[in-house]
Length: 144
Length: 269
View 1 (cartoon, rainbow over the protein chains, first blue to last red):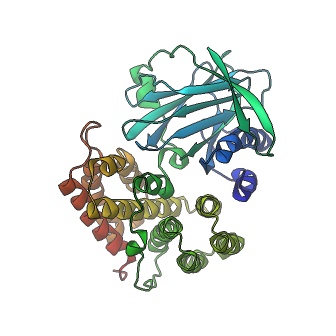
View 2 (cartoon, rainbow over the protein chains, first blue to last red):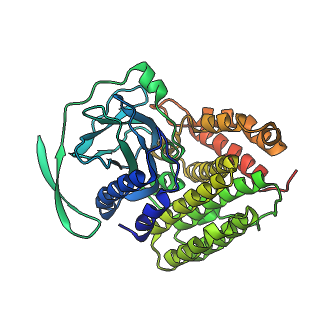
View 3 (cartoon, rainbow over the protein chains, first blue to last red):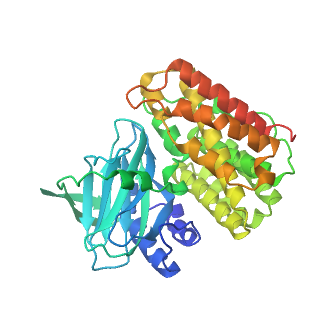
């Protein structure tokens, strides 16, 4: 992880929070876990975007956000929650809602998805939890 | 099917993690697609993200797009915020050109603009680290630092209840990024490069944000002029996925953004 990535943990507490506002300490814990996992991609030449998407999963529904991805780049999306017993899942969809084939990583409260779009444009990121519990989360992404 | 992959962790240790190639999830329904959020920090690509893809298959002449003229002083806070965003995009441009002196020049201009908005404290430490990263040629770290600068300034503006300035700073950065990217593609057009200029919906988002501002801000000549041009820019950036912007379309995109940036950087009206 590069020095700014470490500093980013401190900045993140003041960043915009959406999809419901979890407590500040929960946000920091989720962000730290997401950044630690994203550090693996950084070591593999991916650049980290230090500004996160943080919030609380809606009850029984996935949290969905649009992303703008560029053909020619590769992406890793990384999400974490502070609820250790939960199983987070991360999916990528086209702008029309069709799931795309992505490389996925899942380890309890940590999940990631890697994708190289053939066409630039809008995609949708979906974060869900197997039991549908409204847990806090933080998502960061990396690209190269 | 599971496979084990070695990744080095942030601490430099080697860890094994399992990747799962699962069955695809079901499609989203119409309501879910329409309800997917537009998260400014996540939905809008960073300038570096756009510039990186244009650097593949040859190094563009980034330095030809450095701004030569000294910044025009402004007094209007919305105009200063737009210029601040545009200068942050210039920082990414200087990093892409790997020009330490230009990075430091831009950083100094960002510092002056931040000072005009009463945000000098938020930037002082960053100015030093930007210079250090430029001198040590840590370009990836510099990109992260510039984006963190934008995040910190946005948080400070929100703290001052200047939410509209956050949007204007982000818009300035976006327009300057598109100006740079379209100029690079127009100078040496190829279908592959033009694919990076399909960026739908972002101008529509900004147009909506401008509409929701107070009458005093949105009726200001500059803001009204920018808003008037955003739909045309969105149309150019929203081509069908299978047909990237044509050479003519890219030239129109460049000319339109040159015009919009000239409005932002020019004398106050």
